[in-house]
Length: 354
Image 1 (spheres, rainbow, N blue to C red):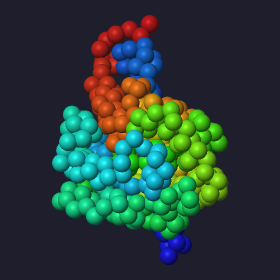
Image 2 (cartoon, one colour):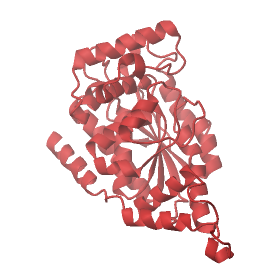
Image 3 (cartoon, rainbow, N blue to C red):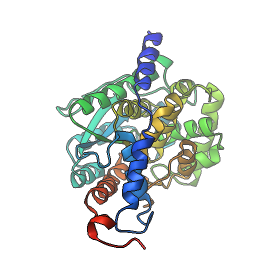
Image 4 (tube, rainbow, N blue to C red):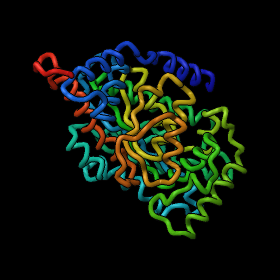
């Protein structure tokens, strides 16, 4: 069974087309011909270049967009690593489905869909808008042993791929990653420590707002999880299974699946970036399809982004997750494309370049 799952993952990764450098250069030339000093629009020009390289078009139609919110619970919550109880995960999932969460508000403003997926919530949920791809009823406590089996981790990744492919077939052309799972900053911190080598004292942040005593406990839990599981940094699936989470694995699949469909994917904060790092280690060709949205207040986030090779668009001191930072950046992406499409060139406006 595991070999079949690996085969499906490998096949999906192999469908990711290389970044189109020729199209990116066309975007550079077009941008330099617009009525402005070269490079004066900063990251907006870099975004336009990247989107051209991803899609092969100077101003692709990315008007259909969605944030994929993957949800899952974490057994490591037994260790008291969060300021909120685990029961909040299913409660927040219902909030997403009813349109009441921060990501719903921002998605409505951006004209984006919110797609909520249960890949590992420790509750039996039912709602007409919920996509159920449940692999586990919450992960096991990684401080005592593996969070998931390797097969479960692979199934969660493939669930994310399937969701991305389904959304692309329905016309979605721009993706954002979102998540919900009490305890998932702990899983992300362990993955960050394993995959980047940063010490736990740097990878562990405040999460849902824990105090100093709880932070020290969380650092100790991260160290214990690594000691208990000995995750292999050279094997991203091993690390994902032993010290990750079902929703993090689902996001790995969303990123790889979106890239395989030729779609850009905006990476949210710390948890999403942990998934993005795993995705980049599994499918290196997915990296150019990722755009970093913002720099989280989680202290290890900058090093995670650096390890992937991403630079965030904004820094608003956010640490909510859900996909909120990624959805905010849909506006900047729209702006970058409109500038490419609607600005006059020096030639068309009859303006001298010198």
